[in-house]
Length: 263
Ligand SMILES: [Fe+2]
Image (cartoon, rainbow, N blue to C red; front, side, top):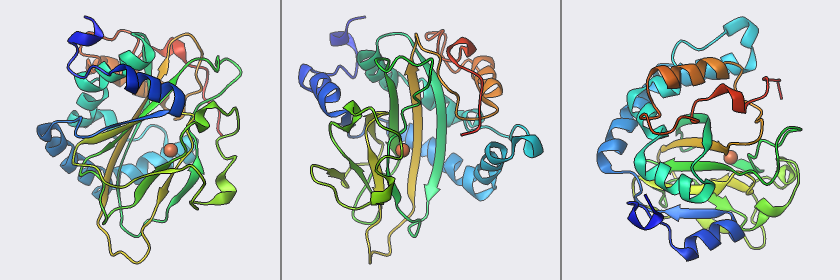
């Protein structure tokens, strides 16, 4: 299938933008029925303490072991990982061979503090920095003047610096930044994982919860550091559940990862 035949064919301008600036904004990429299936799963993930439990498993793996439920075991979350429109976009940016790295899901409370400037590229001794890692940030209800904003620093993916190199700046406004604060439901922002970004609160606004799911993927060819101690179990569940839809044999392959080590 050529890019022209894909349902979400990116044009030259978008491909050039991603390469040069490190992001793409895809309003309404996810259909309403998928968003409607994801939202109650996010509620369950937060309200039943499953999110908190999965964090405990990352912080104290010896004590907590694998979480009782993984995000990708929630049916719509599992479907999202290889959702055709998402895979169309990713394969145009990364080529056909990439592996799933992780998925996070959250209903962010209106009073949640901002998240300082950072990037999420998993550099490592066995990672070729030419190899892409991509985050797809899915905003189930979109973004508007009642939610925190996503702020990105276009072009910063080309710097070879630590994830925390701008953390001392908090979420403050930076020259050249782009504020993304107005998106319809089911919108996705695709980031080169090395792009600096922040979550910025709107001071003085009562706000509303922000439903946010992010999935990330790495180009095949490097050995990537896993982010969760139970990463093998996560990949194996992805394979057992057939989440690659029989079309993406690399998506849950262990051989693309190094051993886990605590950050
Ligand atoms: Fe991030």
